[in-house]
Amino acid sequence: MSNYIEASELIINPDGSVFHLHLKPGDIADTVILVGDPGRVDLIGGMFDRVELTRKNREFYSKTGVVNGKRLSVVATGIGTDNIDIVLNELDALVNVDFDSRSVKATRQSLQLVRIGTSGSLQRDIPVDSWLISTQAIGFDGLLNFYGNSQRVMDLEFEAAFTSHLNWAPRLAKPYVVNASEQLLNKLMVPEMVPGVTISAPGFYGPQGRVIRLPLNDPDINEKITSFRHGQLRVTNYEMECSAIYGLAALMGHQAVTVCAIIANRLAGTYSEDYHPVVEKLAATVINRLTSSPVM
Ligand SMILES: O=P(O)(O)O[C@H]1O[C@H](CO)[C@@H](O)[C@H]1O
Ligand SMILES: O=c1cc[nH]c(=O)[nH]1
Image (cartoon, rainbow, N blue to C red):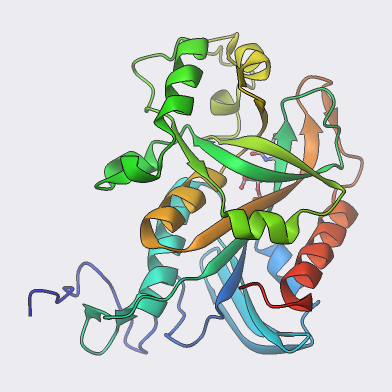
């Protein structure tokens, strides 16, 4: 069968679960909340009316349950877009690959993927403890460039304006710009939510312009990012996963959105006194919006 996916390409564990996530087809809901911190899975699982299953392997900790009569899953991705490559490919395989015949199903299923994360602000007027929703993501990680036809989901005009403003260094991966799902943006847009454009960086320190001991390749990079404008849009924050979630979701036919609690303001040099209640209220709000009425 030409469609056959070899054992080395999609690794299925002896118990029938997928290699890293240790989840089996049917274990995940249509709506999946993605969090970086595995500790946030217990927080969100604690908001479920009933937990149906819990799985854990490495940093990939998952729960599926029911809230307000709607099935939801929460999956910890760990940190970084390299982990997102694993999580998105395995979640997609769980719904779109027949594990028995090892072939792609004739009918594709679209998941709703909602990342609840933490982030650092790049604009002075977006203070710590704000909530931010990412209308677009800019990937500094380069992950999406490995996939075929990926330019079809990229905003190349935005990319060109951004790289020109920053005088983008040729040794860095080409940044890519991808939009969030319009439907999920509308669903989660509450008055407290600040809309913004989010950079996903392939590191927390140098790649986000932080200097501890090592100097930066471009010491002015954050100032240039803060001053960049593309029409009405400005770049608002750094985190480490959103670009790959938006990019892979768009290529695979899933919907995705990211909301973050701002825990640091890079211009003011401030850090939240305690961001945990901010994340908890954000998660409760997201779950309420996702389960209070049909999303589709
Ligand atoms: O709080 P999470 O979801 O992990 O998100 C942010 O926090 C981590 C860095 O401290 C990165 O994963 C970044 O994206
Ligand atoms: O500044 C920050 C804060 C949280 N997460 C990040 O990636 N960067």
